[in-house]
Every structure is written in structure tokens, then in C-alpha cells.
Length: 296
Image 1 (cartoon, one colour):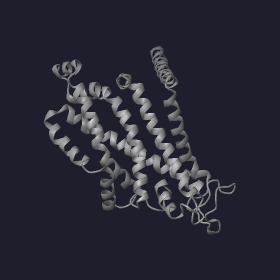
Image 2: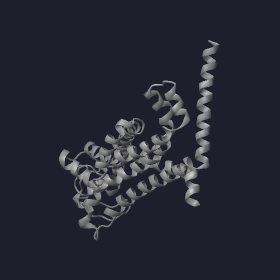
Image 3: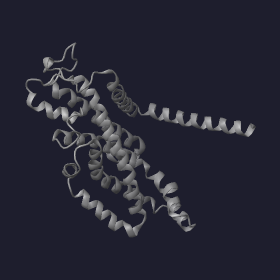
């Protein structure tokens, strides 16, 4: 019984020490802390907006093209829908697409990069396939896939992920090629450790830093590409209030109702800028040697 209680106490102390170390890291890097705070704010908006705001699809032709004011904070669109409600509800689409694309890209990029970097027999074949996919511009590949599979959030995630996975795989592979030559990896191979164990315990932890940094850029890129696809009519269905759809619908009314394009555009720019700044700050914090090289 005493041993069990001691184990619980040690576990709690371990959790507390990790939490303290994380908080000290964030305090030492206020840009990262601020970026995470903004992203958490957008996430809270995405979760709360559908519960407290009016239906973004609710039509009110009498109130069409009303400028921002007390009745409508962001004004209304050409059919009287609330731009405020549609902009805040559109946050969920961008964050969902960005998060799902990032998760899919990291998972498959890690698998492909680890295999290509550690198993030399497969390296040439796998990376030539990745190079072939990267030879096609990402946005054109996404448009082609969307025209093939149809318009939906799931297909948007698949289309964007296919273009992003090769880039993640190349970054992982380059890290693995360096890690594979380290003494501790060679010692593990000499001792007969199985390849999956070497990859999980030795290679993957040391390749995590560039993957985390690249993941932030994938997140930002996915949100931009989703908006481009929706703007071109090849992304999310028009019934879904995504920022790309809002920008597309606002084109004919840009001079008469500039608020229709201003608010979703500013929201998209702010979220993408925050993620990119967060990625730069993480790179500087995780790899200070790169910062010294850039300053030299």
C-alpha cells in the first residue's frame, strides 16, 4: 500500500515538474505564448459561435447590404445574412481543415520519411514518387482532386494533404539521414535491436523538432489553400460559411459593401499570420544554432 502511494506521489511530482518546465519555457518565449493565446481564442470562438449566434444561413432580405452598426456588428450580405455570424462560424471550418490536414500530413509524412531515410533500398523508389507529386503545383493538384471527388470538407482535407505529405516526408527523411549516422544508432543496430524499436526510441524523438516546426506551416498553408479552393468554387459547399465562400460571394459587392470582404479577409490574415509567427518562434526556440547562423 505504501509503495502504491509513493508511486502516485512520484507520478504527480513528475507531472508537476513537466508543467513547471513548460510554463518556464512559455514565459521565456512570449511570442510563442501570445501565438498560442490567439489560437486558443480562435478555437473558443469556433466552439461558442454556433451556440450563441444566429444561424449563419438565416435569410433576411429586408436587412440586405446593411453597413456595420449596433444591429449588425459586421453588417449584412446580399441576402441579409449576418456577416458577424458567418465570419465567426467560418473560424471552425478553417481550424478544422488546418488541424486535420496537419494531422494527416504529420502521420503519413513521418511514416514515409522514416522508411525512406532509414531503409536505403526503398529510399530511391519512395522519394522519386514524392518528387513526382511535388512536381505538380499544390493548388492545381488540389483543384484536380476536388473536381474528381466532389465538394466537401473531407475531400478538401484529402486534396490538400496529398500535396503537403511529400514536403513533410522530405524534411523527415533529411533528418533521419543525419540521425542514422550517429554513434548511438549504429550501436543499437550492432546490438541487434529491431528496426521499429530503433525508429521509435532513437530516430523519431530526435527528428521531432523539424516536424513540429513544419507542422505549423502546413497548418497555415492548409487554411490558405482551403480558402482559395472555396473562393474558386472547388472547396467547401456554398452552404457552409467558410471564409473562402464569403470572399467569393462578396466580389460583386466589393465597392458597395466592402465589409463583406473585409471582415473574413482580416480574420483569415490574422489567423494565418499568428500561425506563421508561432512557427518562426518555435524554430528560434528549438534550434537556436540556426538563429546564430542567420545572424552571422
